[in-house]
Length: 83
Picture 1 (tube, rainbow, N blue to C red):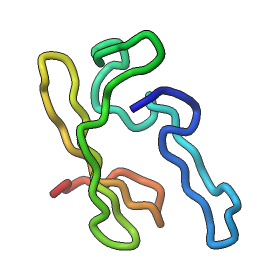
Picture 2 (cartoon, rainbow, N blue to C red):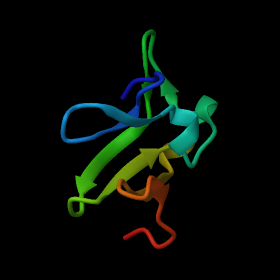
Picture 3 (cartoon, rainbow, N blue to C red):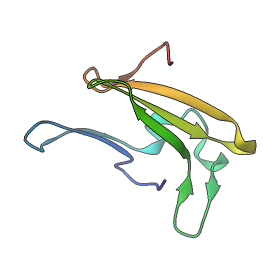
Picture 4 (tube, rainbow, N blue to C red):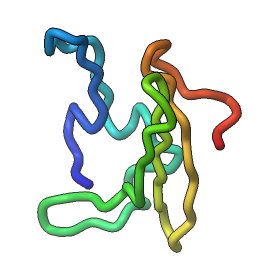
C-alpha cells in the first residue's frame, strides 16, 4: 500500500541503497486506476519471495483486475515469464 518514491527499494548487505522505484516504474496499470483513500493508494494484493533473487508482486487495478509481476532483484528488471 502507499505511494512514494520508495515503493520498492534495493539495498546491499551493508544497508546502502542500490536502487529505488516509484509506483509508476513498476505498475502494470495506470496509477489513477487504483483505489484511493485520503492518504494512500491501495495497489498491492500480495507479494511472495520466490528465492533470494526474485520477488513476485500482485497488483490489483480497476474493477479488481489482478496482474502479477516477477522482479529480478539482482538484475533490477521485470522478468518476462512471471509465475
